[in-house]
Length: 285
Image 1 (cartoon, rainbow, N blue to C red):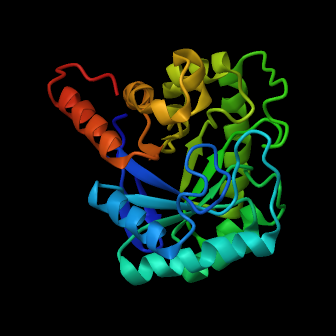
Image 2 (cartoon, rainbow, N blue to C red):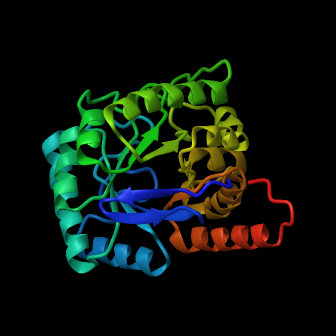
């Protein structure tokens, strides 16, 4: 990718000339890999400190699991989980760039008031008609993700005729809507594991460069997902090596953000990727 990319995170300009790392912070009891690990303030702050020290550029705070089969939790409970955590992070680590992982405009608004500088919405506004206009009003970067169905039913029987083309068409349509509302910074997330079979996921990964035509940075959320576990016949706790391998594939195909559980390993992958680019006399991206 030759064009210079940057996003305005609440007044902080984050350059994406080199790929960045988004550290996952699930303050939930039931997320597929780390549910229940980070529910006390001490555990949360220890994990944030660890991710920042290992090189995380953003921390993505989520209060509701989106694993296959998950259902929407009560809005009041989501707010109770997420907003105090955002405030606490910024008290302990004031310069942290925080993304909030939510499908609700009200939670996005409260998170922004608490100091979040990015909205990560797995539903692309499908679950809350006010989400896109709220993002436009807040003027924060928006992670636009593709999902077929909802977490509750998305893996029942996902079908596409041409998955990459259909996801690309979806992005084109939604980008038009967001631009019309005045949303400036949009990050594209093809939604690995969200309403896709293993085959669909690998088709998207190997064709990830197709989304570069939209002139938006691409986020890859691959960390410890079932597309790795099913191929390697391991559980998520044993999927770090596979995650690292697919991170390199994503970077080679144009990803500018990696959303990860394991920051150190992702940062090392980016360092090796960047070294390869420096020594490649004929770069393809």
